[in-house]
Length: 67
Image (cartoon, rainbow, N blue to C red):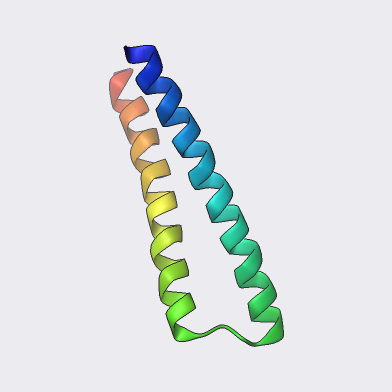
């Protein structure tokens, strides 16, 4: 049961990473063209904050788990 849950979580994280990378490429292209709207900037900021927030939390959990 734990293996199935871990496998699903791993797949979800891979999808999350891919979406974040694709969104960053889209943002870079739009920024170079000068076409970044306020709505896109808001969505991009929320997604990037979520991505890095979960990465930071995961690192903190690993750090506290080994102590």
